[in-house]
Length: 135
Image (tube, rainbow, N blue to C red; front, top):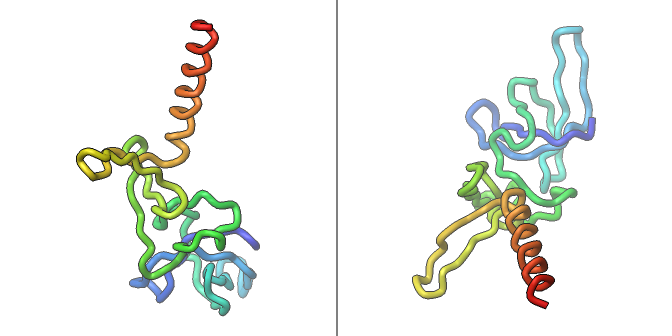
């Protein structure tokens, strides 16, 4: 209870959205249903386990601890973009960084924040190191 998951919004053919497990209803040992609430929606509903998958299996990765902070979460127009390094599907609002080429006026590379952070750290380290050696 309280875990975030990917869940189908309208049954087996519905879109995958991020939801919170609110309650687990046990009818029998091998037969249970989950009460979930989709992030960004106030109502909750009961679903069977086959409509639930681990978080980010079908939905894009987000960079916020409280998923409701991302304005694009579960929006009809939610856009995702694959990371050029690890190829995971990322939210364009909060988890992907685009490197823009001003002369060609287009994006030349996109990385998720997990892949970009080590590069940023390495660039900062090399800059500091060259400053120490040239001083």
